[in-house]
Amino acid sequence: MKKNEDGGKKLPTSFTVGAIALIFLAIGYQTALFVLRASRARIVAGMDSPDTVYVYAQPGDRRGGSSVDSRESTRYGHEGGTGNAVSGDGYRDGNPGNGITPGGIPEADPYGAGTYGRRNSSHSAAASSVRASVLEKRPAENFPFDPNTATIEDFVRLGFSRRQAEAIDRYRSSGGRFRRKEDFARSYVVEDSVYERLSPWIRIPRTDINKADSAAFDALPGIGPYFASKMVAYRKRLGGYSSTAQLLEIPKFKEETFAAIGDLIEAGECEPYRLWTLPEDSLGTHPYIGRHSARAIVLYRENNPRDRLTVEGLAQAGILSPENAEKLARCRIAPPQ
Image 1 (spheres, one colour):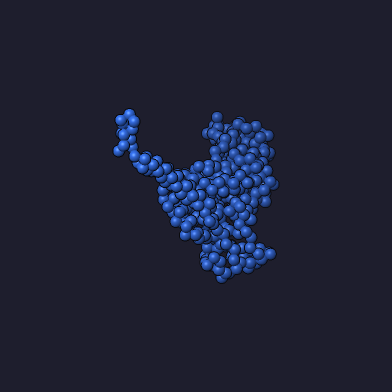
Image 2 (spheres, rainbow, N blue to C red):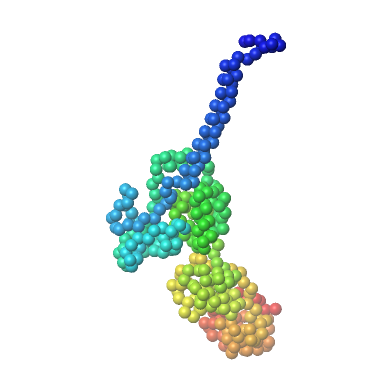
């Protein structure tokens, strides 16, 4: 080791150069690691194909080396006899229920146009390897969520990539809605294994027919503006629905329509009907009473003690028919004061 002019020791030039090279090597290594992580994350986010795809094919047709399993496919009737591409929201023709029953059971194909099935897609070896290694480091969470209101961050916590979460959010922003768990399962970003894990945690609130407005009723499948207004008007006459089955009392409201929405609605709390205090004109608008019986009810409650003020008493007095008395007895009625 040489000495400098002041008599101090001087580091060899080779040592200084080596130290500087080592520093740059460490910086380069960290930079390479950062680029690698970013590249791997990009592959996972972008993927080389969707996790789940929908395939349209003629019976027995093979695409991508695999055939459409008839047990998992849905017969798709289309007059033109041609397949439809999957829309950006992950549903055929943008319709989550088109050609698929609520339970995911294949429907009959009256046109024999071919099959339209759902299956997991295959990925390149590189994408699958990177995806597996990255996702293993990011454990998915399980917690109750409503797919109609969950945030993008919620979906990421549930195990979806940010790109998948954004695809779900775009579907909702364009007016899409998940009415049932099965609707969420049909989204092209939801793999079968992911749905099986998340299914017990999905919470989709039912429509409360005692609080819904015409727009909420109109949004139900098979209802439309006409019945939406009728459902609101009949609720007003009843003073509130005591059960969802009362919708069947609306003229022309078919049982098939009720069956299609039965699992989507509920009759929540409502104000008890004030049978023993309402004036005659208000009683007369109730579908189980009518104007003639309304006058008789007023006379009955004015001339009988409190313990006789019952629906059964009105039936025994001949004021209400047995059928209307039975219906009225199922309603929520405020006790006499």
